[in-house]
Image (cartoon, rainbow, N blue to C red; front, side):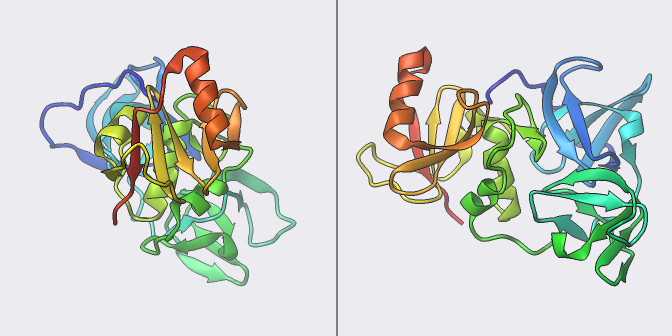
Length: 260
């Protein structure tokens, strides 16, 4: 995704808060178009509260926009994150208990106690096997992106319930502790080292087009969230490059290799 972004508010002052709902749309304006999404436990800096809406900047990448004030909380700092594609938040530490919410990969939770196979949080109970410590980083961003295979394409999406090309890249990077902006044009301008046009590609490289980005999965395939499949999918690299050019979006504009 490459789209219109709300300019960051002047100054860094603000009140830290957390997202309190499973997925929240970050709006360009109150009740406006979705710019990006945040998942439960993600941190924001609230610059202004007005008429039920909060103007915020996101801690993960500095993205600015508006969230419903009711979607935010002053809860304790997260201690764990969801490291599988999705999980459920239960009303009790029992696999037969009623589920309260579905949570996406990347959700951040404060664990208060361990109860057998479940972790207790202020929101409910989550299977322990689906969590890892908040400071435990993955090592392969493409493996993280592969968790999202089949996830529906969603413009501005950032969760296991729908995401776009730049959301998929950001999910892989952030899980591996790599700073990453939210939109594909920002990613093209900041991520990795530029590769020559004839340089062999390897897993973890990135290909950029005007308004699009894809992971290199291996020597012959890309992995990307794309409107052609309307999902996160593998695609033959040569076929994808030809298709994107033929549909009017032009050639590859940059090849990049991530650096630690």
